[in-house]
Image (cartoon, rainbow, N blue to C red; front, top):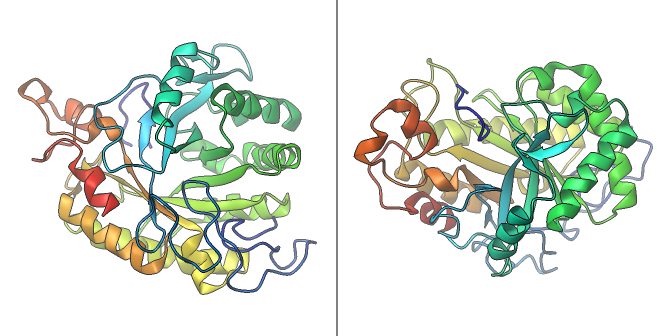
Length: 351
């Protein structure tokens, strides 16, 4: 997903949230039996009877929007999120130095104050590393230990136990940084046994591509405990227009079969180990517009399948454009580009 810098066109253990064992060939134990304790997208253990956690949907599907870690939006709390994805931690001016969007120090007191307000209702904060712009930490740090320290510094700055790694573009195809990241995350999880890890990856209606599957295989190789694979259901290309809700569902269905194979999961476990993030309204690709009806369709599908959480890019775009936002660039960065009431997409993703 796009960062806040510049608008651009865009384990071995199976999901720790869905099962508690390890995938075949990992050197670990066998996968847990179906029905093992799960975690919701908000980070709270799911009740053993499978009922929903507080704040989740009827089937336990949470709503967790992407928000700016620096600037508040009037739409942040729309839909009563159970978690917030704080975007984004990337490298700063010096090597292996975590910053918020390359501009704000990781220990910026204003960010800490903002996160405190976001979580006052009981929601959790998930730190998202990476994004589409700037330099990712895995491309700047020269060792797994240094990278793990950088990740830990960012998590500690806001008191988070949830880390999301948004890997796309050149970083997704860089085998060296993929391996370094996996090693660093595995080391960090050994230091912090309660750390929940998600990977945010691009997807097509045909499923995850070879590079994304290689990243997940690398996580398996280094025994990273993966809670969730968050699919960016957006920006498919000019040959995919019109039914964005349908494409999201087709993409999720194709990826679910892949995740079952990669992690050796049960059918239900692969769904529970998935999240879906849509770019609301006007997308980066001409002809792609994700509507409120699409959001309701995706939400209903997620609840039906028991998907962990749904999200949107982003809370500050969840509003109708003003006359001053007439340019397409503004519609992509400041508003949705479609007719709506403020926070309407959040509400659709929460019901």
